Length: 321
Ligand SMILES: NC(=O)c1ccc[n+]([C@@H]2O[C@H](COP(=O)([O-])OP(=O)(O)OC[C@H]3O[C@@H](n4cnc5c(N)ncnc54)[C@H](OP(=O)(O)O)[C@@H]3O)[C@@H](O)[C@H]2O)c1
Image (cartoon, rainbow, N blue to C red; front, top):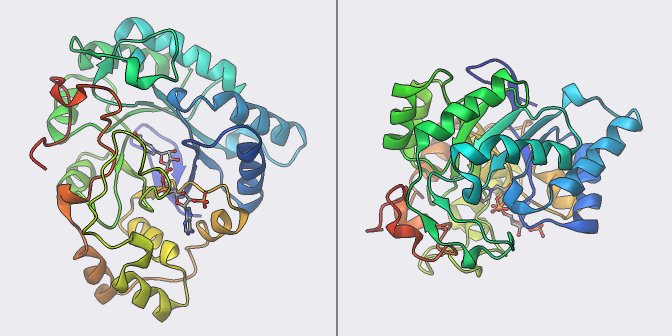
């Protein structure tokens, strides 16, 4: 395993295990399998409603003596419906209770926009935009979570350059990580370079193209783009190295020092996704894969399951795309 050094201290395993839409017994089995395969970085979020399942598995894993808490790197996220100064601390305390942990390794603001919570937290479509989002006020309480010991590091997800720069200009603790959609068709080189220059690590979500989830409301998938894992260039490079298409795509991202958090509940595929350290892409492979970038046209996750969210003053993505 390779690690990325965080600006505030600590090392993040460059391959993590994604858990969005993984629930109940399927998640219990898959997470146990992932731990057996060597995954130590686990990505969850309050909004995924699976922290309690992950907590149960991790607790049993530690109790059985298979590993220790300090080997793990646990990431969770402040949900859009709690993105306000008054909600941060209570929300993280609840996450820690569900995860059965004293601290997480990284706590992220899930989105730069806030929505108004409803009683049913699973019904995102019923949550209206809250246009009063105040990044600086939220970040102050995020910083307090570090000094209070509830998280080792803090960061953001789905923020754009302008939003991150404003935090950098006004913070005591710099964001340690940015988690963004990043894959073959949405490479965002400018945003990644900006983070590199500012000593902020980047994590790629939906790095395999989030197949299976694309029919969800609020997602868009350009029908003109070939299926990522069936892309001709990826297939050729995969054949050349004797690797799978998913391994080529993951290796490409990791070779840029960007972390990946592929999600699979299939034992073979989740094992395959972490076996990417025994080969290297050459300069020609890298150039071919770089050329597949479709810019904003490749973006899949637009968060439009929150009705009217693209009109929020902190909506981070270009509406023209
Ligand atoms: N911060 C955010 O706003 C945000 C947004 C989205 C996601 N995330 C995080 O990023 C993680 C990953 O993103 P994602 O879940 O959207 O999608 P993803 O990892 O890009 O893709 C998951 C899909 O790919 C399939 N798959 C996995 N490995 C494969 C392989 N080796 N070969 C072929 N198919 C494979 C999975 O099916 P099987 O399970 O059947 O293998 C699943 O359908 C999430 O789980 C979550 O933790 C964060």
